[in-house]
Figure 1 (cartoon, rainbow, N blue to C red):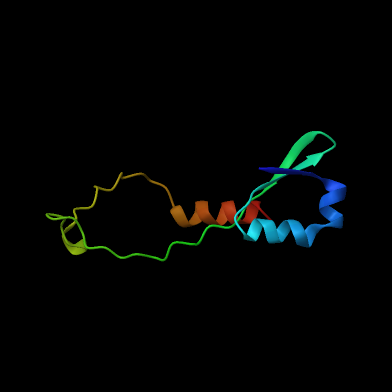
Figure 2: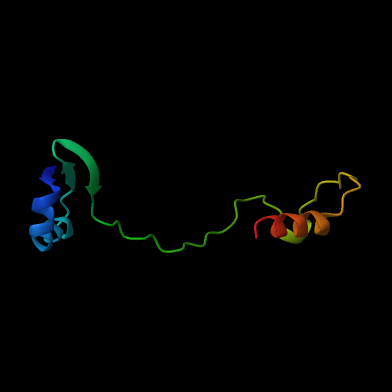
Length: 86
């Protein structure tokens, strides 16, 4: 991995970015202390849809957990939480 000080990186940024585009990683140094790393972006994996595993129930056949039976007004709690962040 290449190492470069901040001043040199600033003066030759385009050159270093071309190196990153070619696949190289660069460590950025503040004097002699590494403070950052510039790495190439990985290709984002496309969203893949796959078939459910054999024996998996259809969504409308999944059993839901029983309600907890708590005496709490969820909407009131949500409203209080949202108003407290203003």
